[in-house]
Length: 335
Image (cartoon, rainbow, N blue to C red; front, side, top):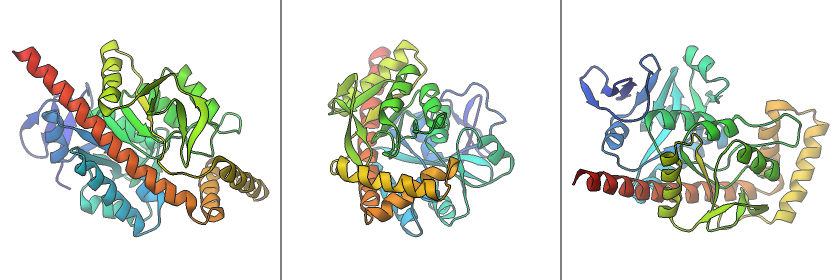
């Protein structure tokens, strides 16, 4: 993979002289990061870049649909004027801006799932892995990407003490995340409360309520709302100006989803089946999602694919708006 490495002094092409300083890493000279040249160049000139996760490739869909989806999401971002930067773990390196060959390698199967709690072990073991929301946020923030698109975030489960590492990552990495809310199997109220406690701004996109993933909306009210990509970008800029450490969560309801009543019935059956089968811990979420897809006749998967595309499109528009404002501000200061 042709790439750049990121050190304390900025981006460097492998085996060449320094390209340009950018990003916000202070000391990562030993960190196994690989940044593609096009992503490094875009960040260097403050062009719009959108981070994309890779667990949707490694664990979200079967082959070859997983690779087709990865390529499609990147195309959607490009259509809106931004550069996609899919992030993944290959041979123990955090790769920002996967090539076509990289995407195919992850899509081939056998990759692990990298979250913040197991990332170091995967890197040390030189494994391949798809990046979750938590790990994608970590990598995006490290290299200076401002906007990230995903499907739904992890959150608070009904089981006591079962909470996703995504929540801590959202609180620690100042990146704007476009999502369709917490995954529908989670406790939306508790997830919103936890994010509020962690200081993560919850912002509705053209909505006053938290999105419900495959169900368009929950009954959880949101404290703020924006109606344009520029307004969303302004929230992130204000967060940065205030020096607050958390990212911004932009809740984007899916345009056409499942009814709350119908989904609730399927979820009750899925949970009952999981309990009867003795499924618990890390195995619970994939089991529930697979069972829901079966019970809905593929309906949950159809909506999931729709919201992934819609979130990627909105994220690109926000990234374009952010870059335009940031560059205009720089030009104004220079005159």
